[in-house]
Image (cartoon, rainbow, N blue to C red; front, side, top):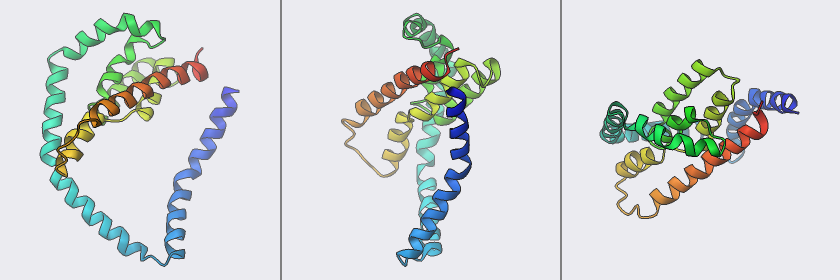
Amino acid sequence: MVDMFIKIMEAISVYAIPLIIVGFLVYGMVKKVRVYESFTDGAKEGFQTAVRIIPFLVAMLAAIGAFRASGAMDLLTNALSPITSKIGMPGEVLPMAFMRPLSGGGAQGIMAELINTHGPESLIGRMAAVMMGSTETTFYVLAVYFGSVAVRKQRHALPVGLLADLAGLITAVIVTRLFFAI
C-alpha cells in the first residue's frame, strides 16, 4: 500500500507545477487579462518588498544565530527528548521542530543534516521532511512580513501561529509513523 501511495505521489508531482502554471496562463487569457504585464508588475512589487524586508531579515537571522551558538538549542533538545520520545517523536528531530518556526533556511539545514546522517528513507529523515512541509516559519513571518508592512496589532497572530505549528508537528509525527513506520 505504501509503495502504491509513493508511486501515485511521484506521478502527480511530475505534472503538478507545469499544470498549475499553464492553468493560470489559460485562465488569464480567457478572462482577457494582460498576463505578461501583470506578471512584470507583480515582479516589480516583489522586488520592492524584498528591499523593504532586508533589515527585518538581518535582525531575525542574527537572533537565530545567537540562539544556536549559545547552546540553547542543545539544552532545550536534551530536556524535552524524553517527553517527545513517549509520543513517538525521535529526539533527533527536535532541533528541526524548534527551528522551523524561527527560520525556513535554518530548518532546511537541520533537515539536510538529518537526511545525510540517517538517510532519506529513514523514519527520522521522512519525519523531518514531513515536518518541513506541514509547519510554517511563524516568527519569521511575524518579524519580517508584519514588520515590513507596519502591522502593529499582532495580538493573536503569535499564539495562533504557534498552535498551528504544534498541530502540524503532531500531525507530521502521526502521519510519518502511520505511513512509514518500519
